Length: 386
Ligand code: UD1
Image 1 (spheres, rainbow, N blue to C red):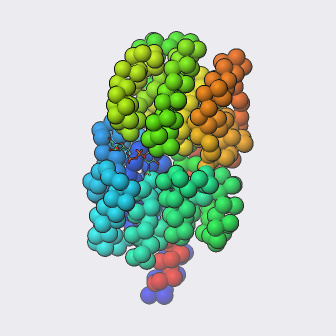
Image 2: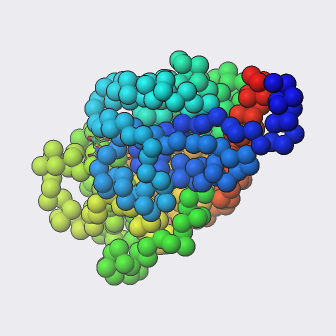
Image 3: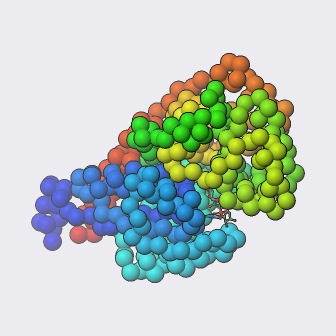
């Protein structure tokens, strides 16, 4: 046994135990795709199986992305669908537990901050299976955001925490996470941006030549913005105002579309002149992003992608869990005040807006660094238990 252990250490050829990799919602896919690829390429290879919880299930939110990102179809699909946070989280846990029991993985890897992230981390941790969290340590310090609760709790459960920016380690240290668990590796989401940018669909093709001299690209789906009728109505009016200055292109999230319909505002897009689009596949969105005059959003991912591409971004929230996009990148947190939003749009139109630089290690190689760390960690653990 012992001599085999030494042999493994020297040759580094031990086959590692399997990592169950979890995705659930759209923002997970662009993070997982480069990781699976890096796991297959690293030496020793990290055996991985992909589990999709089914938190997002629409074709528009799902299959298109898999194809665009070359993400393999999931090995295991839990098919949970929608529900309240409690119902969705509980259902994911209920369906994920037997998967962990049957496959006895070496680790469970989760990404980001969606309900699937926390639910699967919790199942694994309670079964003594190590949890790896990619995109750890981000904090908005706003506990009204469901994602903030998912972030804090997942980080408490994780054995290995991969961070995208320096502030994340400081947040984790403050919460008592031992620093030997933390690895600053960069941003896997930017791996996907850089890899797929050459294949991005030209904006002109998507917009049929309708916005030849620029446009604002808008996304909106946070409960704080779309579930409160007063805030949502104010934001829609502000977007209509923006559209009098600059064409506005708006791929509409299912949650947001549901709120517009519930408010009886189906006619709003036609009246406001805002170009509504369905949820877009990754390459189409990347093409729109690359050529946008500016982006107005409440998404976390877009704040990072605009920083990586040097596109001015106005974040329609009161805070961000990604401060580096403001400190070094092109992001400005403007909240939901109409005057502030319009003033910033006008400034971007007049002067090109805020310029920035690309943060450290947002270089397209974050997934490779994670794969190496994961392989080392698993090897070390296997040697110890040999
Ligand atoms: C979730 C994530 C959020 C992420 C976002 C990206 C949590 C807490 N939130 O929010 O962090 O930024 O995804 O999209 O995990 N729906 C469909 N089809 C789908 C998926 C959802 O119609 O494929 C509908 C649901 O029925 C629901 C609404 O959209 O009414 C919201 O979906 P849900 O997954 O609960 O949260 P998101 O707002 O998408």
